[in-house]
Picture (tube, rainbow, N blue to C red):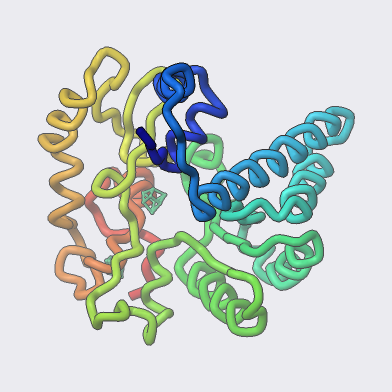
Length: 279
Ligand code: SF4
Ligand code: SF4
């Protein structure tokens, strides 16, 4: 008798002493012949190489304990870039205030220099400690200037992905508004509808900044969580985009949706219009 085991069984048996490991031992004890193809072997080698690179990165990272936080972050990014681990993208994220818009180009150059492949910018949200610091929030004009700068930098640095997750970007990106098949692309606020956040105490909120408890997932089974999620009013409102103010009838609402956290904090209702929208 001969058997062929797929890559997942081999990898599972290499990394864990679970069912796959027991299965291979069983087959070997019964003196059954195991066939392994070149493709399977190459896949196993590829994953093991990745694991070795990752372990090397972890070893080097664990020696950075004496560095200050900024140096540690920069050195870690450099190490990630040097490790060239497949599918792991060295990425820098900067949360900035209006006075730093003029420095965004320098930040992209710095990210490139240390080997990053992606730089994501966001403005300071009126959330957490920044709720009390209105001086740090951008106004509508500054938000427009900020997003224009993201798109200018995108153009002049085509070899690094300069991006932002601010939903208002859809007002500037124009030609990219449609997907490859001509469909409307949604990359606006997905809080509640397509993403959620779970705090360390198990409380689920639509996003880390939109702090409205939806449920505590700890005592629940996956089935119960799914049911509660489907029945949740925030999820329904976000899927249907039951927005208010100028967002209600906006033709862009299925691409943008505005930031619901800004609406909650600055307007007192997460369904209200996004106070940063300059439309
Ligand atoms: S009105 Fe609302 S949905 Fe429309 S673009 Fe502005 S923030 Fe987005
Ligand atoms: S609520 Fe604002 S911060 Fe949260 S996911 Fe939506 S756009 Fe992002």
